[in-house]
Each structure stands twice: as structure tokens, then as C-alpha cells.
Image (cartoon, rainbow, N blue to C red; front, side, top):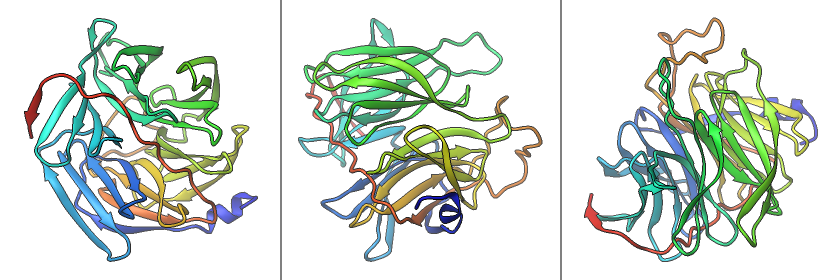
Length: 313
């Protein structure tokens, strides 16, 4: 896949449709050969089993913005109330509700190679003097700290194949940042702009990185997925039949299937591209798959210790 023409020949096929108001955070489970994802606005947690073609809603009335498998079983998930551990059935445990003494509203997340959880915080409220968010880390001792701040709307987060580069998206400013990452200490340095989209391109949302180091970014308002080379140059685009493309991940037995979530509820924001019509769809709501010729990276598992008070869901 050495040129954009190859990407242009790729096709996004719908494989499940529950009318997700805001489908997000697809996660591939290599043990179950199953894809899980969330509808963070419609309050649903879903799964899709490619071998059987079966898709189902596993849980309703649960607010999940981002999530990862937990080494002890179940999941760790993020939402505007904090970071939670969930057994996948009835019980959740609060892991973190604030960072640096302030309540934290969490969005997307990922885990590093040692099981720390990195999650973005956001307080985006157009037309108001809203507080800026950033990147927070839950370390292996359960403590929380900020890695960076100044984000308007933190979204897709991921790592390069060697784990030495951390990528983080600020959707509102249309940028994906890159940091040098020290996995031993769990610290970042050398922040720089990896990609900055133009005002006509839509806005970057969730992301995934493949084994060759290419970064795949869901483009909200853009109806497509962008693929960037490790140097930040655009390799190509894959069209998706949805104007609000929200997130991506690699799955399938060979990790060569790119799963794409979308959102059916039209969201009007000041950062809409010129000429974008928020009244006419198709906006989204389905789960798509793109059969690629690359191999993705497996999503890492969180190893954050349990603490706090439990509650039923």
C-alpha cells in the first residue's frame, strides 16, 4: 500500500446498525475474536462477532466514552464522571474522579505497554469561557497526574509500534500531536504537531496506528478516514458513507480489518467546515469495516489497580 490510489480502492462496508447516536471507541478482543464498541450518547455497549455475523447490544443505560480490557478481567472505561473499572455485567468501581485536586471529565483513552491508562480530559462548551483539558495518566500505583494541558477537545490517543511516540488529538484545533514517550517513567517530552488539517477537511477524532507506523484518523464532518505516514504526510483517504466518522481500530484474525464507528445524532459545532450542512445526512449510526492490506497493532490492556466505592449499573 505505497500510494494513495490503493487506499482509494478500499471500501467501507456496514456490518452492524443500532442507530448509534454517537458510536465510539471500537476495541478488538483477540481472545474472543470479537469487536466491542460504545454508543456514548445513546448509552449502549455493543459487540460484533465477524465469524458469525452476529451483533448485539450487551448493556444499556451505561455511559462509556472510552474503554480498554483490564488485566484482571472486565474493562476500564472513561466518562465525564471519571475512570471506572467494570466487570462487564453489573458492578463498576470508581478508579479516579479527579486529577490534581479538580474533578475530571474524561473522553478517549488508551493503555501503554506497562498497563498505565492515558485518557484525555475535556470541558468544551462553545460560546462560553470553558476550561481547557489535557492528557491525564493513571499510573500503576493508582495515582493520577497530568501529562499535558491546553486541549480544547481531547480525542484519539495511540502509540507508535515501538511505543516511543505518543499521539494525541485535539479535535477543535484540527491537530494531532506527537510526543516522545518514556515507557519506563511514563513521561512525555518533545511535543510537536504531527498533523494539522485544513478548515475544509473536517476534524480529526479517534485514531489507530498500524504495524508499519501509519496513523489512521477518523474524520468527523469529513465522511472518511485519513491515513498518514509516520512522517505526517497524507497517504490517502477512505470514504465512509457517514458524515460523522468518530473512531477506528484494527481487528480481525490478522488485525487487517479496520473497524469504523459513526454517529447518527447531528452535532453542530463552530468548527464545521465551510458549507457543511448539519441538517442533511447520512450522518452515521452504523459500524463499518474496511478490509485493508496492512496489519494493525493490538490494543494494549490496562493494569490499573482497583480502588474506591462500587455501584451497580
